[in-house]
Image (cartoon, rainbow over all chains, first blue to last red; front, side, top):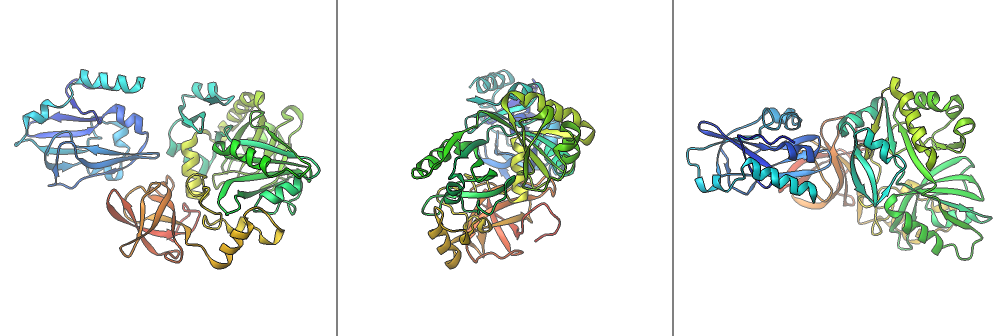
Length: 132
Length: 364
C-alpha cells in the first residue's frame, strides 16, 4: 500500500499535496483499493467552496459509495474533468492522474493544515484498520 | 464462518474474499466489470456453494411442493426445473427458489444461503400430515455455475458431449461416466445461457479446475459475488432481502407470472389472488439513469416532485456504462418510458422507467 512521504492525509483517507498556490486533493491508494473498481466520481463545481470535514462529492465503486470529505477549506480552482469519463484513473493512479480537486491556498488556515496526518500517522491508521 | 470446498482454490487465484450470509466467498477475482463482461460475451465460472439444497422425498412429496410453492409443481415434468416462491399465509415471501423435479416422489429445492435454515424449518412446519422426508443436503453439494454464451462449448469440452446434448433451458440431468453424481441444470442467475452444477463437495476442486482449464480457449473467467449481483440487476432478477422479503409479495415484486392461481390451493393463495384481482399499493419497475450517477438500495424515487417509492437494487451497468436499477413504487404512477427522478445524495437525477433486461439496447 503506497503512502507517499510528501503528502498530508485525513482519517477519511483523502490526501493533500501542497503546490505553489494550490492544494491538490485526492483519495489514497488504500481507499481506492478498499473501494474496488471506481465507476463514477461525483465532482464538485469549479468556484465552489470546500469546508474542512464537509462532504464535497463521492467516489462510487461497483459495490459501494464513499463520500469525499474536504481535508481543508478553500475555493475550488480546478476539478479533474478526466474523471467524468475515466473514473478508473482513481484506481490506476490515485496520487497522480486520479486527483480529484485543486483549491486555492492564498487564504489557507494553518490550523487546518496542522490537523492533517503526516505519512507515518496515516500508515499507523491504516494498519489499525486492517487489524480491526 | 463456513468455507466452501473451493476456498483454497479462490485464494490461489488471488480472489478478494468477503463474508456473506455466514460464508466466506469471493467478491471478485480480477475485477467486477471484467468478470461481468466475460459472462455477457464469453463465459464466467462461479462458486455458488453457499446456496442451500433441500431434498423433499416420499409418496407425498409432490403434494407438499404444491402446497408450499406459488408455481405449479404437478404440471412440472420429471427432469425439469421451475422457478417459484414459498409464501407466508399473508403472501409475504419466505424465499424464492428453483425446484428440480426428479419424480413425483423426489424434489430438490435450491434456496438462498441466508434463508436455508428458515426454509428448512418452514417446510418441516408445514408437512405434518404428509408422508414425506425432508433433508438439508446443503453440505453434501458444492454448486458451480458456468454462465455465458460459450457455456455449452466449455461444458462439452470439460465434461463430455453427453453433458450438453439435448439440454433445453430449465431441464437437468445426473451426469454419468467419470463425472458421475453431478447434477447439471440449464439454469442461472445472470440473464445468459448457462449451467448450474450440483457437485458432490469432495469433487468440487477437480471439477472447477477441469472447467477452468477446458474453458481457457473460450475465454472463461472466474467470477465473484460482485459480478453475480451486477449481472442479476441488469437481467432484472430479484434478490431476497432487496426486491423480496417477508413483507413483500411476489405480486408486488413483479413476479405474478410465477404465481399460478389455477393449480389449486397453496399457502398464501388467498391474499395473492386478492392482489392479482384488486391490485397492490406498490409495484416493481426497472429504470436506467439519464443523468450521471449510480442508484443504490434505499434511494428515493420521485415523480413530479413527489416521492413515489425507493430503489431496491442499483448499480453502474458494465454493459451500458450508465446507472441502472430496480425500484418499488406506488402502483400506477410509472409507465414504461416515463421519466422519473432518483434522489442521489440530496439531488434528484433523471432516469427513465425501462423494461427488463436493462442491458439491452433502447432507452425504454
